[in-house]
Length: 125
Image 1 (cartoon, rainbow, N blue to C red):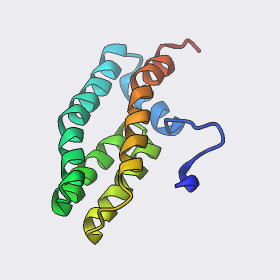
Image 2 (cartoon, one colour; image 1 turned 90 degrees about the horizontal axis):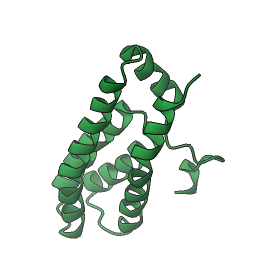
Image 3 (tube, rainbow, N blue to C red; image 1 turned 90 degrees about the vertical axis):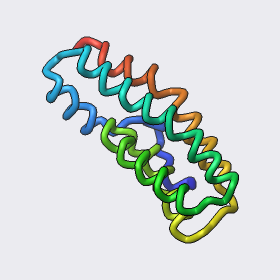
Image 4 (cartoon, rainbow, N blue to C red; image 1 turned 120 degrees about the vertical axis):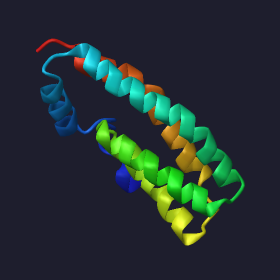
């Protein structure tokens, strides 16, 4: 797991954020909607993923982790996407052990999401 840690623990892929900023053309409401859409999807699916991990439902783990991985990449959360990829691979392989720390890491990163997203798009420069 140490391999995915960066020196400054950047939560977002700066290139992806710059791309989203360009697409939005300075429309903060559009950027807020992107974040809200991601959060709604996360809040809807993550409890199901945790339950699937607990119940050792490998098919569900693989499917939900895949969905959330793609959503995470789309908002520049590359590290979080990598954590979901770890869960997806575990689901594919029928693995059930050692997944709790991955879920905890995702929850910690999501705790930072809104604050850092807002900080990035509300700074002037």
